[in-house]
Amino acid sequence: MDGVPPASATDPLTALAELPGVAEAVAGARDAVTTVHNHPANRRGWPATSAEAALRAARASAALDGAPLTPERSDHVENPVLAGAVRIADERNRLSDAWRTAPLQALARLHVLAAADLLPASEHQDGLGRPRPGQDVSARLSMLADLVTGGTKVAAPVLVAVVHGELLTLRPFGAADGVVARAAARLTAISSGLDPRGLAVPEVGHLRRSAEYRSASEAFATGTADGLATWIRHCCAEWEAGGREGVSIAEAQ
Image (cartoon, rainbow, N blue to C red; front, side, top):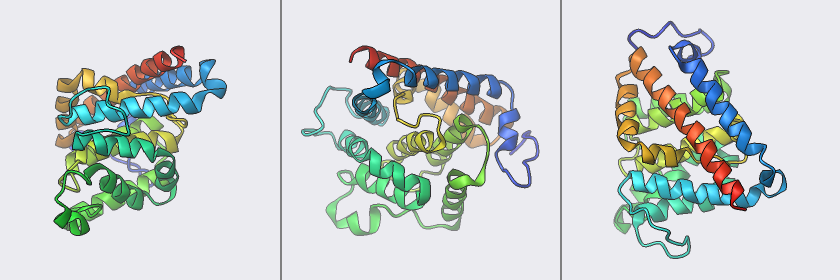
C-alpha cells in the first residue's frame, strides 16, 4: 500500500491507526455509539431498539444497492435485495455468534440470506454461499477471518472499516456483495465491542451520503495512504451519524 507506514510484524492494521485524522475519527465514532448505549431507553429496552436499528439498517443497505426505500413489512417484502437484507436482520443474533468464532461460515450464511432471491434456483447449489474461485479471493477472505478472530488489536472502528472496505472491493460472491459487506461490518462492530447491542445505524448515513460512500470506497480500493484514510474517516463519520440515528430510535420508544 503506497505511502502507508510499515505494518507491525504482529499486527497488520497498526499502521492504519496512524494515518491522518484517523485517531480523531475513531474517538468520534466511539463517543457517538457510547451515547446511544447509555440512553435511558436502552438500559432495559435495548432488544426492541436493536431490532428497529437492524431493520432500518437493512432498508438503507438495500437502498444503496438499488432497492426502493419503502416501509415494507418484514413479512411481506417483494424487492429481492431488500428481502435478503431483511432476512439478515431477522437472523442477526445467530449470525453475531457465528461471526465471533467462524467468520467464513457466517460470511457464507450472509450470502445465502442476501442472494437467495437474486440467483436462479438452478444456481443455488453452486452459487449461494460460495465465494468466486481464485487464490486471491480465498487468501483475502482468510486474512479477514484472522483479523476478526483476534489477529489485530487496532481500534474497533478501524477494523470495522477494513472489513467493510475489503469486502466491497473484493466482491467475493458476485451477487449481493454490497449487502453482505455492510452486514459483515455490522457484525464486526458487534463482536469487536464497538456496538455490542447493535443500536447504531451507520447504513443510514452511508445512504444519505451515497456519492461520498462510493467515492470513499473507491479510494480504499487504491490501497494508498490517502485512500485508506479517506475511507476510514468516512466510515467513522457514518458511525457518528449512526449513533444519532440510534438515539432517535431510543427517543421514539
